[in-house]
Length: 90
Image (cartoon, rainbow, N blue to C red):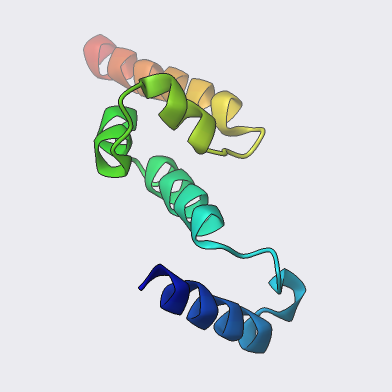
């Protein structure tokens, strides 16, 4: 069965994403899906459980985020704190 999936993925990639031909594998899809789930708000531990990893460090290596992700999270956290203070001072 895995061979059928790999073959079908390779054919679909060649047809629809020619720039990815020979590069898009089930493993690459696994990394992409884990990264997208995390970026859209899924908890890191939930991603870990979904992937079946024993160690959170393995999941952390699996997830690839944009280089501004940490800065964006920092800014959002400070904005939430500022909004809470506004509610307390009115």
